Length: 184
Image (cartoon, rainbow, N blue to C red):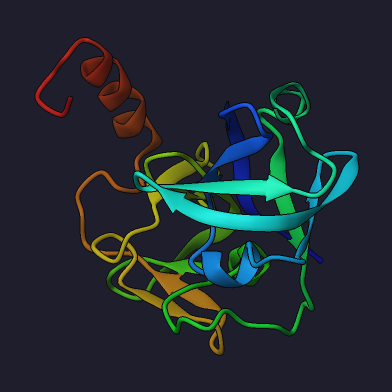
């Protein structure tokens, strides 16, 4: 099974280093020298990794100049993991562990299912399919809104936040942000 661990950003310098937008809670493990990563249609091997001004920079085997590095810009980096493997951090989850979990509201009522996990630059979002037949909703995957993830019981629990499961409330909030509203 493949797990997304990052996205290749811009080339750094002229020797083929790449900036990486990290999408894992285990960067030391996932970007260790010798690690094989899947980058689209090809497999690359980490030659070296270092932190530079708060960014992860990678040097990949066979990527020796800026031109070769620029050709990889924007590619998603994935690693193959055993489906039974669990993250080292107790509060970290792989997407495949979350997708399919039932969703309970704050009162314990079953309201839907986790359909997908979206990895955005700001934060991860849970895409929820609601049982009520409404459009799906997106919920930021943060403790304040998703205080409980119980893999053994097969569900996540949402906080008591008015409008959290209302797709129409989410649709209204987006134009307000774009216009520089209070939530901007």
